[in-house]
Image (cartoon, rainbow, N blue to C red):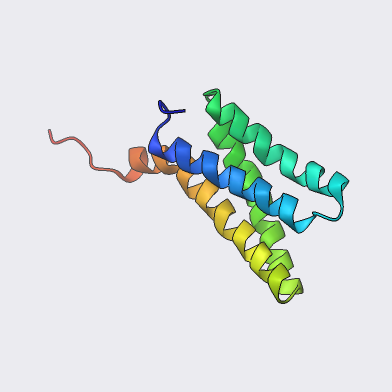
Length: 113
């Protein structure tokens, strides 16, 4: 774990946070909780094992979690809305951190000639 880059660590912990929020949100329905928490846990495991494409696919999946969080935030009120906003914020964090290397390669400083 200590050999992961900062972006990979950010994605790893954000995925664990998404899984925890799903487990918390569906705590009365354990089958649904496991079904929703399993994908971020599997992606976090793949990142910890340094699977090369894990952050890319986690970022793609985070687009769905973002959509889910926005939908629930618009639909519900109170603590459920806070739960949905937490999922939304963490999914944006996964998307940005997972894309960070590509963003630096595209928009970073170019070497002087």
